[in-house]
Length: 209
Ligand SMILES: CC(C)(COP(=O)(O)OP(=O)(O)OC[C@H]1O[C@@H](n2cnc3c(N)ncnc32)[C@H](O)[C@@H]1OP(=O)(O)O)[C@@H](O)C(=O)NCCC(=O)NCCS
Image (cartoon, rainbow, N blue to C red; front, side, top):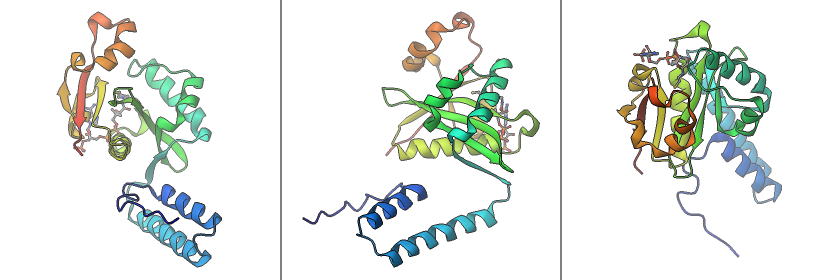
């Protein structure tokens, strides 16, 4: 039987997903070695091109389990400053797939995660950049990475509760109210000790597909 893929099947795939599809077809001998090599060379060429064009000296990527120690310290640091909620190591481990990290010279210098609610909305949580390198573009790069991920997942609204509204406004978020985000109220606000004296503001960004 010969099934035809929909013409949009490969839309929004990451390079890793394209590589995985190529490996899958190759293992099943549906892709010739020479075609697999062509795909790998094209992917390498893309990586090299991006490497030579990146003026920042940092990249943002999906977090890995080997990043856990750095994630734990970054989240604990900003939680101690009162900027983020504390998160136990086990929670970070379980949610590793939702985290992105910013890496400079092999050191994690920032992180954040995209938490998806069962209503389909998502929240940016645990955002923090190393205190030594603030205002050098890492925060924006991490948030834009997670917004790209949200678009690929066809999420329609991403929100954040923050004490840094100016930063989120720069990235294209606009002000909303916490009351407009019932998911957040049910998940965190109802249990928060600052429930009646909240000093955070809600910002959101909407996507249409
Ligand atoms: C908020 C935070 C993540 C920003 O990261 P950053 O790497 O310093 O920010 P960037 O350099 O990417 O800034 C992007 C833009 O926002 C601006 N900006 C950054 N922080 C800002 C702030 N607190 N208020 C207003 N504008 C801000 C920058 O000047 C820059 O503007 P530009 O594009 O015109 O140059 C960082 O300050 C941080 O780690 N804060 C502590 C933890 C925290 O508050 N997390 C957010 C919880 S929701």
